[in-house]
Length: 89
Image 1 (cartoon, rainbow, N blue to C red):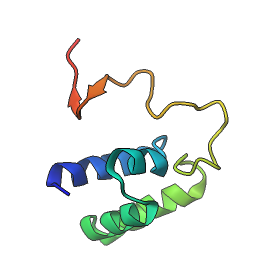
Image 2: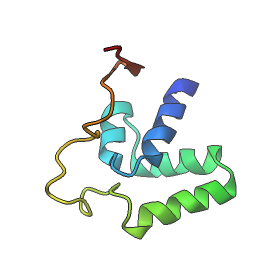
Image 3: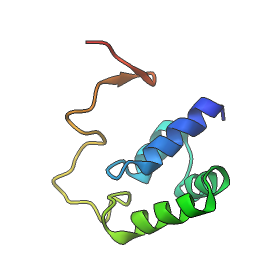
Image 4: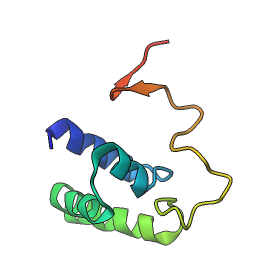
């Protein structure tokens, strides 16, 4: 895995509405692998804050906790992304 892939996984992990399944689809990494990556790359305090947020119910990281109304991985206001490059309008 490249540094760019790791950076993108961390970004996706911090996003509340991006489920672990979306990360698995894009990068082939399981939830446990994402947690291990976050533990390895973040400061201990940042990792604890992230885990607390993921498990608090604020985050929609687990599909079972998500509202059935949410059917997409990205916000409607988010710019289009293709091949991890932000498309110009």
